[in-house]
Image (cartoon, rainbow, N blue to C red; front, side, top):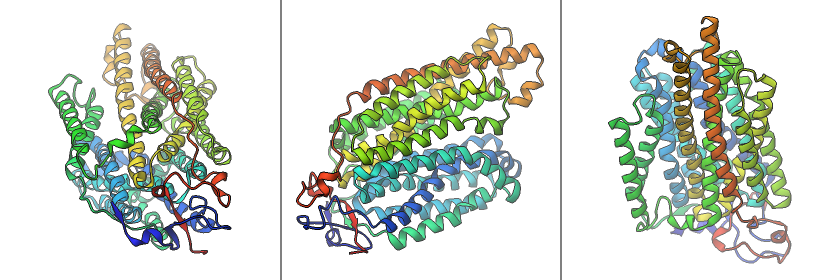
Length: 546
């Protein structure tokens, strides 16, 4: 891959420094972006990541109103599934496009696609249109997620990157906390269409900021995009996401459709691996997996996504069915986990910047994650909200140690030319982990609840076993209600126990992560200090002030 002459020039925020370090300037790796410019770009990136994260959170509370107006209740789940599928399938492709043709152009395109999908979704006249427009929105969201991480990787040396990625973790936690409440308020005051329209002014601000301030090096790839690899990877990802979405709900796990999707997914991914070894510019270059740290943190990201989203799904259900919380309150009762995750992410990000050390964090994080899940697996009908809140805080702290460190190590393990692919692979692994976690923990939960109800003679309630909210539960006879609460407690115990075992696998893997020095440390900032590992790793730096 060749790059344009812009790669050796400087602009408002962009241009790669080249040549030996100047006496007063330090190395290329140390010349940091101008603080004010970085703050503007960071604000745009945070808005973008918030839009991508918040969208599914907001839409959940608006779904009853949407169905009431558009109908099509039988296709209700596809409003969420279509978005998730498009996001997951497009993630690695966006990363590769950014690597080959330039990060800024790819990111701006993703914003425009996301805003177009948002506007069209708000204008939808039936459920079929809404699902189609959600696909467009999801395609843009995939680029927002990857673009944010990769641009930070371009602008900020790894030594400084932790604190910025900690901020992103904070925005993600806020989206999870505030999304349902914001969706309810918007739907009640402005109507469900504004749950999509609200993206337009925020996205326009991000678009203007990025266009005006961010100037990354332009790239011009001599090789063609690996279209065959992109198609095979998309087919494989789509097949497995559909398996985890439909299995045990829309279709039985042993049904012909689920088995067929598994076969298609396996064949597609096997063919993808073969194609990637021969492609001039593979969508997911095999050589990045030869780096032990990259492979390990990708696996840890998958495992943490597995446990995190399974917990977010089944903790509110336990709180509503067993502890008697309302739907709104059950979301607020997740605060101990989400606030712990946000706080630890911010602290760890700054600590990584200060010390340059990170190996201990995946070890501590996966240990806390395992302990938190095993504690949650002990909850029963007598567990108080205070006790469950403490258990959730332990889990949240563990996730806070892991979420951004895995991205940081993944990016530090590759050269700059593969930054987009590294970011997209780390993001995709977490997304796929969440899909498998929700599916597997959900299957265990449903099976255990049904078995418990049948064993206690309450099979009449089993058909609605996962659908009873606090009000519906209160209407049941006392004996049936207590029976159901015991069954739900048993189901969540099984789900969290499996989550704990998965977290132990992450703990084992984390011990094999090596402490590779983060680029951009103090040694590189001294005049005459060592240069970055290779010229290809020179990052864009701010000029604007030069």
